Image 1 (cartoon, rainbow, N blue to C red):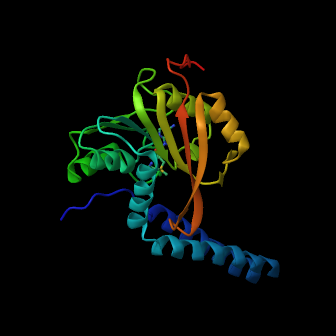
Image 2 (cartoon, rainbow, N blue to C red):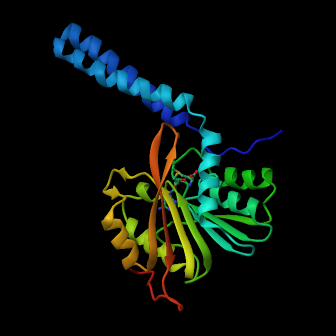
Image 3 (tube, rainbow, N blue to C red):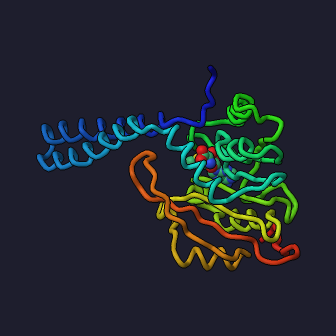
Length: 251
Ligand SMILES: C[S@@+](CC[C@H](N)C(=O)[O-])C[C@H]1O[C@@H](n2cnc3c(N)ncnc32)[C@H](O)[C@@H]1O
């Protein structure tokens, strides 16, 4: 039976092992030919090799399907909903919603950056075929910071492990996601508590989300084992107002 491919951990395994072995060799040769303090690098080397082993052992696919289930259960979609999955990758969330709803319009957008998860537009479309939902899911190349849909179009806008990756224009991406959501519509993203480039799930983020048009903002912790045991957050909110928000795309 052909199985969907929701992206692999190959790059992480390779990068961690390569770094670990590189540091080990530098430690050995540095200590032999330069200074014994180079041996301290073995500590870092062990850390990266251990990380590589953890990535290699992670039962990535089962765990990711569980995370998808949790998010869908939390959002409680309804028949006929229009759903946008931002940074869809291999289509994990868009396809997941299409599988639980008989009638829906699910759209997955991504710019498919190289090494952004080892997936492609072709792969996402193939997954939708394999999962038997190609008639309900559409994938398009589009940037989260400039979503090619009108105001108030979607009932649900989701993203998993995307916003913390957007280093430039993250706020613009959030504003765009809220702009295309209808008033009362549901916004839900899964993200780590902290990451580089100032990503942090905290009161400042809550204020930002409220300022750009969400209410009932909740941070729901979720314990996952991908690629290791850690807590991530479902960040949820509903779009305020009964009428269209005038959130300019030029913002
Ligand atoms: C870690 S992957 C997550 C993929 C998918 N959501 C999942 O959970 O399997 C992050 C994805 O975000 C996409 N991405 C990064 N910046 C983006 C942007 N500005 N607009 C749209 N997609 C973006 C990457 O191409 C990548 O596919």
